[in-house]
Length: 182
Image: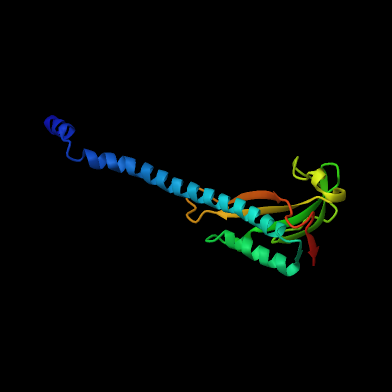
């Protein structure tokens, strides 16, 4: 019986199969985890792009209407393709300078969310509203805020919904402000 154990211990024929059986689950786990993390990073990049696109589209106009905003929200939602863009919360607002480095909300529109209240005081990052360029302190910026609940298509490692948010400021291009004509 002892000689059989010695023969078994010296036999190397199945060693590669045993090593593979021990390592394979770890490798598959690493592969799936990498795929999920890359997918989540791609969606986060699309959320950032969605915010910049929304602010940019509004900043190109001198005034926007309710129809324009509906079209902008539709275009923004398409940025998330192939992910479901219809669930993205998008808020686009015009913030007019108060002459002291801050601002107040002139108008705000939202898709799947709540618009900012008109007249609300906002803190603006330093340098965005250069008072020297604005006639009679009439500077403004367009603020796009995006929130998206990411759900992993595989769901093995990222369980549940991951909230991804971003915001983007853009200066109007055709004038000091962008008006809203509901």
